[in-house]
Each structure stands twice: as structure tokens, then as C-alpha cells.
Length: 393
Image: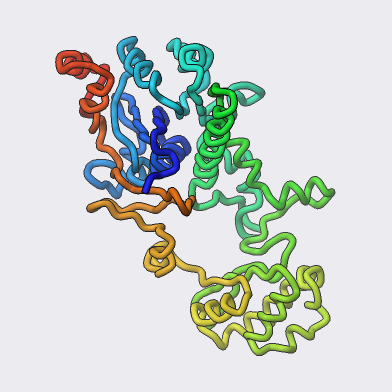
């Protein structure tokens, strides 16, 4: 079967996480993605251990479905090769510091004049202008400045970074959304445009329901551990074995919870009659629920509850999740030879994702890509020997 983005060419100049993740998703859905690394390589190749074939697992998780080329864009010859690649490209993804491409004479304005159909996507920390414009940004900085750390952590404890690069990954997803929006608009106008996804913006957009609560005059959001500021029971609860997470959003679900737990006294307690009352008495509710849950194993009661219509699940570790049969059923495990990766979360019924290429070794496809541009063996050798298109780190 064909994929949704078959025939689309993407030039990926980005490094680290947000941009590479964006380009990997585009590649999974059929785009021909050419990853261009500087002579020193994408720095995440060294972000290990563990390492796989000389590159860190971190790099391997973000660069599937791409071909690899190395170019030194500080040299005019390297920029000339890039312009040849962009002549047939639909999308450029980059995360250079603001002003870098302009300094090299290949900023958006010039590229738009040369290639009016090109969609130029930039992923940045704070955008190019404004009080913080052009400053470097990493996921943890965005989590800190965007408010995420202020609401993450135990009640009364210190602010905590979410234990994964959430903002980087969401920024990559936002970039995919922006690119696909621009591609759709191009079908009407015939013209590409500049697309920007900033970590700062993405962090702020994640602050739901905390910002809406503030907009409505609510108090400053506080750290609440696993609890929810607006809903109860919505938290992790102890059982006879592992913890489970309950996310009970309405009275009907609460009634089902009490029925499965065979605890009518909880349902009839006036302190727990509606969500507002349960929220006001969340400490007492925890004692009542954990007393009932202590008679059950976590996995067993979670299975019974979710099948009864109560949103609930056991708190699983990484290896437990990977072994779960639903993980495989949802196509979230990818194996290409010895390569193992996480599948795309975007599912299309008629044109599904396809996984054809493992993450490229450094400059693995240099000769192939340069030959496609019409360069002969002597020209390719000259670029390699001059260091403009190196084939090794």
C-alpha cells in the first residue's frame, strides 16, 4: 500500500530531538527524508550509553526512515549542494540559531525567492524575535520557564522536570501539524510558506487545565503529585500489589467503581456524592478507596474496572509496557532486522505508515544522494576530500 506522503521530499537539517522527531514521522508516512548532518555529526550520536553500531540509542530513536548525508554548510560548496537538493524538495526542517542561515546567505527570504513552493519549517527555543528571541532553548529550560515544572511534583515538594523530553516531542508534533497545514494550503495557492514551532509556545500550550483555571480567576496552580486540580478520584492508589491509577470523570463512573469494589457505603457517603464533594474530601476518599482496594491485586482489579467502564490502569514500568500485548497489537513496536523502535502514534486507515529504513549511519547515503544530483565520481570525491561532504566522523 502507498503511504500518505509518498512523493514528498524533506530535507532535514535539524539535530537533537524536536526536528529529527518531526522528520522521522514524515518519513514513516512515506516522505523521502534526507538527513543532513554537519561534519561533527548530530550530537545525539554521542548521548549514550547504550550505543548501537557506534551511535547512541537516543539517536536511533529519532532518525528512522531517513537517508544520511553530511555537508559542511560553512563552505560555499556545501551550500551549493544544499541548494541543488532544495530545488526538488517540498519541505525544509531546521533548528539553527536565528540568523545562522541568513549569515550564510540561505535564509528564508532568499530560499522563498528561489523555491517559492518550498515549506520552510524552523524549530526554535523562543522564536526569532521578542524579548527572548533567538536565545537557545532546550526541553528542560522550556519546562522550567513554561510552567510545567511548577505544577509537576509532590504536594509541598520541589518543582520537577517531567521525566521525558515532553516539550521537545510535542514541538516536533506541532511542527508536523504546521507542515501538513502548509502543504494543504499550498494546494490552493501554489506557494510555500514559513512554519515555526517554538519550545516556549509548545510548553505554554500544554498548561491545561492550569491556565484556563487562572483565566477564570482561580488560585495559583500548585503541585499535587498525581492528583488532579479539578477531579476526584483522579490519582494513583495502592492495592494489595502494584499501584493503579483511577481517572473517574463523572458520577456514573464513580458508581461503577463502588459497585466493582463491592463498597456501597462509599457510594452512599454524603461526602462523596458529587465531584465537588469528592474533591473537597479527597483525603477521606483515598482512605476509603485504598481500604477497599487492599483486598485486590493491582492488575486484576484494574482489568475488572476498565472493562466495567471505569477509566483505570496499572502503573507499569517501561519493560512491562513493551511486553503488553496491546502494545504489539497497536503497531507500536517496530523491528527492521536488528533495529527496534517505537511505532508512529498516527494511524491512517487507507495509507498507513511504513517502516523501510533504519536510522542512517553517518553520511551513509552520501554517494547515492550526490549522484542523484548529477555529480560524477570525481566531483563527489573532491567534495569528500575537501571535507565539504565527509563520509566519516
